[in-house]
Image (cartoon, rainbow, N blue to C red; front, side):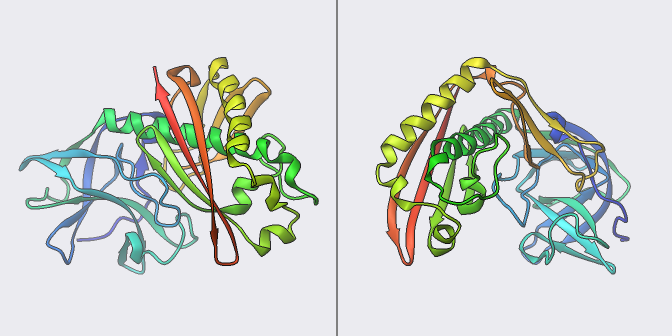
Amino acid sequence: MALPETDTLVSYPDGATSSTGTVLHVEPLPDGRSAVLLDETAFHPVDTAWPDQPADRGTLTSASGTHAIVDGVTGGIRDGKLYLGADLPVRTGAEGWTFVVAHVLEGAVPEVGETVRVEVDAQHRAALSAGHTACHLASLALDAALADAWSKDVATDALGNPAFDALAIQRSRIVPNGSLDTYRIGKSLRRKGFTPAALADPVDVAAHANARLAEWVEAGGAVSIERTESSLTARRTWACELPTGRVEIPCGGTHLESLSELASVTVALTTGEIEGGVELVMETTATVR
């Protein structure tokens, strides 16, 4: 079966939770499962390079029946070979590659050329979208709360504050209606001018961040994903209207359409000693209306 030569077209950035597509390729997997590649899909896969948002849940319906999609991963094709998930050696968008969404199924699979229907669990998607939107807000609020902790000029975030989140982040995981972000404060960050003493009272830092988050949620600004075309590798930007103006952050995930969908966003911060520095964990909770 020939592999696709063009990127998968994706509709999840526009909020779609269902799609119709043509089966382009079926790849048998070592565990007895199969990866089904379609020309287009509404199913959000895990990004291998930055797996912050998990894959959607959903089903694929073909002539052989309706089957659960047990996983969704990003794949890359080069020189007639398909690399999936952790085996993909390059970041999505690398030159000379074709990038695809792989729908992983167990059991019966559709035929190449068959038209199939993808249905995404809309409730689960909505919870992840709320968590991802809240994650971006929380990162901006944390940067603002730590804006005075720097002795040197560093890169800034979308609001013009020193970008603590971008400079210190180690892991970010989107969960239903929230996120968990882990930061490292070590020698590298101190050399950039960050003062670790600013985190001596993480409860106080969280209080400052939460005050700002409450203002932003109360304002109920519009949220959108901006993109110029529909391929999986197209540059996508999260845009949000805040009281201080419009902010934009590159992002490939799914999001709410407005902050008015949220009743609140709050963060809790904890710190702990690790080898060579301090670890900060930010747990973000979004409450939807």
